[in-house]
Length: 292
Image (cartoon, rainbow, N blue to C red; front, top):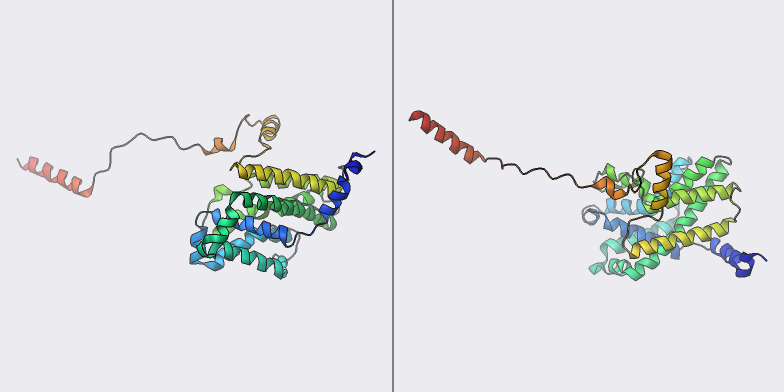
């Protein structure tokens, strides 16, 4: 007898894959996204100095993946803003996180046990967005497998791929934070997830979409909860990536992200520069000696 039938996982996965994301899961997604925005240096100052810029940054954090995917598929980049309920909900979250008296709302959602639940719920939305992106691209480009991967990847990565543009809205320019150059775990996982969902869409993966959604959601939620609880920025893929990159591209084994960020070597101390008063005093003494 089929194992999935015995455990009734197939039916559960089907129900889970059809579950609506609004408002509970989307609310968690908006809270965590804007919470990460508030962690960015200077974001609080921007919210006081220019609320419009802060709101635009928050909308990019919440809907950046839709904007970028619409641009890639030839749709209007503001198409998602027709969903008034989503925009109002995200705007309410932005206002409460940045402007709630005594920071009460921020303190509640940043409390670790609450934050862990919200992070897990956010990963449910991320997985659904990757799956929807691949499916949407499949309808537009039936045999464009690379396009399916790219659109699913963009949908799952969110604002990470637009981080430099979002920083410009806050008056910050840090090109070294380009997500393509240094991928975070969610960005890498979105890429791998997009590949899996593309393989499933092309019938190269012998598993139903609902089962894949459930399995990938469990993996993402578990990984992010553990990493958040441990305050870790590592990746479960590090060991495998290290060996694969070593075999295929000749990268040194054990080359971690920290290896690229060594502090600069300390320069030997030099004598302090003389002030104008010291230079003037020296010149005056030389004149006196010459006169003698």
